[in-house]
Image (cartoon, rainbow, N blue to C red; front, side, top):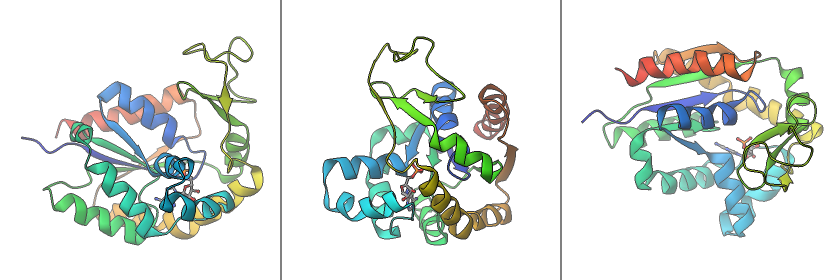
Length: 223
Ligand code: AMP
């Protein structure tokens, strides 16, 4: 049996990792694994890990590797990951990348592609600070770039409750960008060295990026 596809989306906050990961779920039947989402659930549930992560997340820093790795390993035990995964927001440090390699190797897998979504930092502050999602289906919106067709009603599911992330303020985005450049951007060279890196220009519109990304994923899945 061919091992399931393992993709990594790399890029600063606002680059579109979450948006494109959800599209790849639909287009290719892969499963999005977002450590940010897993951590937000842990915070909401009030678990010990969530309580430790909360303040760091609100300040825009990186949560400790031990906590993140435990949460990810737990999620990777679920049967649905056998369909193949898109890692969104993970790995973010050298240690996480090394541990991921070890975790995959233990089941005969490896990273098939690490795709770097390349964007301008300054544009990211505006993209992130204005974004919000439907509280029912998770569809993404933006104060400036994408409002629902009928004010206050989700285009996709008709829901009327929307939410904003506590860390999507301009000030916190700047901290998150700093953390990205200091700790995560070096992983681009790490995956380049392994021969699995692909860079794409992610400043264009969602549909154009979807097409470029889809071409890469189709190529990887066919191998
Ligand atoms: P995200 O949803 O990917 O933007 O992540 C939101 C926040 O969760 C980040 O700013 C970090 O505080 C934390 N976080 C998410 N993924 C990781 C990770 N792989 N390592 C450390 N912290 C993370």
